[in-house]
Length: 186
View (cartoon, one colour):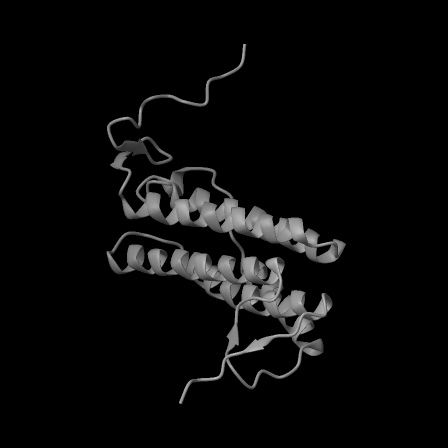
């Protein structure tokens, strides 16, 4: 017999963090890991548009790290140290930096702001970047509210948004899509 996906426990606007603590669905932790999930979905969409096997593999690895981040955000911070939750590592941030450096080696120097667009894969990477920045802002709000959040989560999301910007440019480069420079109206 198949397990039902619906539990009806959230029908009154409450849900549980990992560890069992009940919180309103408007809780910032719920918003933060929901935004990370949205980001993960957009990165999956970017991946669907690509053919480069190395990039596809890298994006799958990033999606795995986002599940790690989501698990951390979904935990009751009072109970997390007692649980077996996968950890983010400094090497995960370094990987993003190394990959950005490789992509930047072949990209032209930016002289203007770039308007997102030109190809659906480029635009989707920019959407992912914007969602990543929102996830980062939510995580900073958690920290500023005095609730525990692993500082590496904020660092990773910060670096990931930079990576997604470079990735959008790189996708345009490999697809021979001209960047759209923003020229301010005078």
